[in-house]
Image (cartoon, rainbow, N blue to C red; front, side):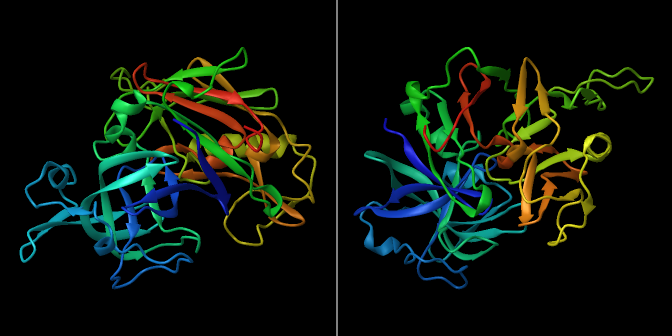
Length: 362
């Protein structure tokens, strides 16, 4: 099937899809870190501002509400309830940035380019909040769980998809592509491939990070391992980081983050400054993102060499900040670090591949 356009927009990547019959074109956040695809629907008790008109399910001949006892309703157990008057399934879903959507589950036809995919389970959101851009109408869930679009269209794609996230450096947005099926295009001598690790929840794509190099110094990712001995020894835990297109920054455990930033400070020759936006911790006076140490993420079997734009982000014309942040939760390899790589997922062979690319030209 033909590639689908992805647009970069202020740290998010938006995918063009059409929904309903007749089809209504819309933009949704492409998110490999969640499953449920949902859009804002009319009537709306509370919706974040969007430029496009709200989707009107009553005008679509293929919109069908889902019952309370259906398997999709059960798949979201703990996040669903039953509208006893209508006999339909209500959902509530939230995200790490406190965004959320409440509404009804339904099946609907989604079109990716010219390909129509019928009976896709979606959420029709009537009460939604979040820090979404006005171009956004919702989220397309590309995770590994039961209600993910990737899972629902697996017979069509055989579990293969790829994307190339274009740069949004300097305030300029570029269109790039997402591909499905055999034509994902992640081939060549410069491809680095790492295993996907099966863990719970199935939503997330877990990889194994063995270490991070800053310049010539490598920092190993030592973490409590499931195979650690009773004496408390550490080692590499399989599946210790999530790759997520829906998260902008790369989040690292505090100990690893502190070692990376300490090594970065030793090697940087620029003057430090506070982030004018108060969000990031390590910032430097600079009018361009250049002359920074080479950063390499050492995934199991795959060394992914980041470009300066994958490592630092401009927060003001004269300020660049390290695009990593500490976390007490799961480590995440965010979309800033993924820019200008063609990244292919092969769920059948349980692998993710990285190929350096100019995503504005892919």
